[in-house]
Length: 70
Image (cartoon, rainbow, N blue to C red; front, side):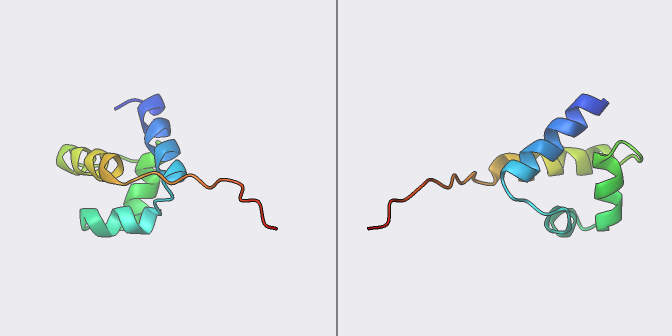
């Protein structure tokens, strides 16, 4: 997995408001491992990468709009 793909995963996580700790809990690993992986400073097992991608894909994305208050 190259740097751009990792950056895309991190961007999707931010857009979907997924915390690194939540992803790490889902993967049964440390949050530092996930953080290092996303910042392209470490590697992760291929199965965990697939599981992380699926976790991010399955999370819904919410949009906050402006609501007029009268």
